[in-house]
Each structure stands twice: as structure tokens, then as C-alpha cells.
Image (cartoon, rainbow, N blue to C red; front, side):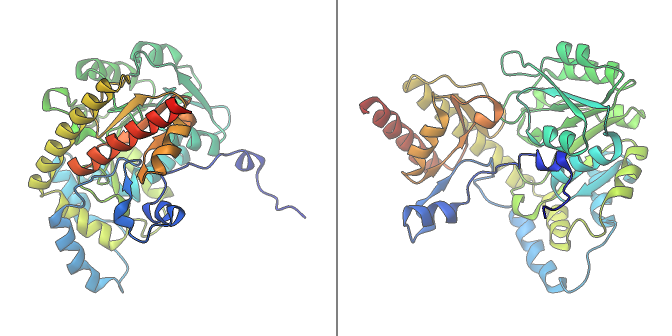
Length: 369
């Protein structure tokens, strides 16, 4: 007898992450995992914040205790850092959990969310999970088309998602245009701005939407410790929003959803400005090196403001497989409707060189076949 699983659950396609290093090393018959370079998941190649590592070692002695269920110290630290009230902030088990909270609170049959057609895939997954429609608005030059998104809003729209910078394109919208969009749209429909890569933007390109939150507009900012702080394995993110939205999220979250190690590491990482600065320098120089190599190889890339570059290669899945055989993991983009592109994360200089060499060999192999 088949299990009585909801039909819309059976229709969901699970999110496909970048392949783990250990799995690829085992597949290639390599005993040394250091021989594999992973540039597929937009992780921080510098590793975690050293201050966070120190806090982790101290916190590990208390893991027999349940974590602070309200993440009180972390909420206070975030509120102070951001210049908002504690009632405006809620940590989550990665920003993905917070996106699920949005589905809980706002979506359901007969509703829709508006997003760009080539934005983060999890928005669509959450919409499908709550039986809401996804209105996918085509991008303009690989960037959110705010005018078209505004025109796509209907009385059934419950959320508008903007990823800034966007994954997988790496593009960011003009700060002034985004500010005007939020000011106009948010009074009608909650606007969610996913700022996972916000710390990597140049200061003049970094929008500040906190005044809208303080003013009481339904603006929901999502941020993460996974990228610039290097804590992806701990799954820790946070939302900044109107207290009514924060209260709704608090009602639907599971008890102790943010573990004690993640809370301790996040508090410490907030003060690690040196690690953030090193990450920005590594990302900027590495991104430029990758783009120069793409230009030399005759490959078109999308101008990126994040820690990855989207590049047109033709048959991206085949190219990723060829590079993986050479010990370099990058990400095919067919799941985003771009089968002729791959996305490559910026690594350390030696990793970038390995990637470029593997890419050049894989392209040469394709020409010879």
C-alpha cells in the first residue's frame, strides 16, 4: 500500500547542492581529499572566522545543555550591530529555514509569490510546498527587472522576493532603485530582500533598507553567516523585519532551532572585522583572476558582485563532469534554465589556478572529440 503522501509533496523536486569533496574523491579513487577543489557552493575559501572558532571550542564544553531557545544573546548582538530593536530580529537555522517560515506565515492555495526567473531556487520550492503559485519574472541583463516585477504583482501576491546580490547570476540592483521599489511596493505587499552576499558588495553598492523596517513597513531582510563569516556548516542566519512578522516566525519555528555552537560562533564572528576584510580582498582579486581567464578562453561571463561568477560554456553539465574528473567541482546551471552555463565559486589563488587549468583542459578535450 503506498504511503498517503500529499500529491504536491510527491511533485516536489529536492534542492540539489554542490557535491561533497569526500564523495568526489571516493569516486575518483583518491585517498587524499585535499586533491579535490570544491568551487561549487559559494563557500568562503578562507574558512571560518578565527574568532568564531575560538568561541566554538569554548562552547563545546556545554553541548550537554540545550541551547538558549530564544537566542537572546545573539538577538541582542545583532540588534546592536544593526541599530534596530531586538523585536526586529530573529535568528534561524540558516536563512533557508527563515524562507520556510515565510511560507508558513504568508503562502497557501490561491496565493502567489513574485520572484525573478533566475533567482535562488529555494523560493520556488517553498511556494510549491505551501501550494502557492510562483510568478517568475524574466531578468533583464541577468539582473532583477524591478519594473516588470512591480507590474507582475496581483491581489493574490503575498510576497515579493529579491536576492541582492542574486544567486546564481551574481548581479545586484541599483541601491537607489531598490530603495524606491521597496518604498512603493511594501505598503501593498511584503517585500523580502535576501542579502546573503550583502557584505561582499562595495560600500557604494550596498543598499540600507533598515529605515523601512524601522518605519514599520513589511520589509523582511534575510542574512546569513554562511558566506563572508565562513560558517556554512553551522547553518545560522537571521531575519530583520517588522515585529509582527518576527512574532509570526517565532510562532512557527521549532524549539531550539538554532544550536548552541552556532549561536556562540555567530556572536563572535560579528566582531571579526579582520576576517571580513580578508574575505573581501580574496573575493575581489580572485573574481578578477577568473574573469581574465574566461576572457582569454573566449568565454562570456556575467559581471558579478558576489563570491562566484556565472560563465557561458556551452553544455554546462558535460563541462562540469569533465572538470570533476580533473578534481575540480563546479556547478551546472541547468536547474536554473541555463544549461549552457556553469557557476564557479571564487577560491584561494591556488584553487583558482587549478580551476582555470581544469577548465582549459576540459574545453580542449571537447574540441578534440
